[in-house]
Length: 128
Image (cartoon, rainbow, N blue to C red; front, side, top):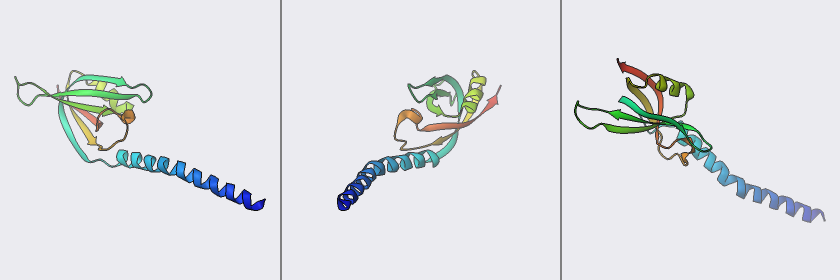
């Protein structure tokens, strides 16, 4: 009877390993995709759309209109903000020309962390 107890105990550990290993790998991959940025930079323009979106995972999603020359059509830069303090600064600077500092994170597995791969980490007003 002791022999059967050891077999079932071994099976439980094997099943737990089979179930937990993919979850652990997914968690480590997600963590690493959010920690290391592929690229960093700044974009300047006017924030023309900014809102908090999502069913379960709420993130701030925005649209920056970048005008290279007066009279031309603006290029749009779509971005995500995960930090509420940065979102407050963007809301306070609506209608002003701003420079957004961003980090690009490629390969983030779900849209729960943001709809874009560009995560804004800072904002500054560049002209009045």
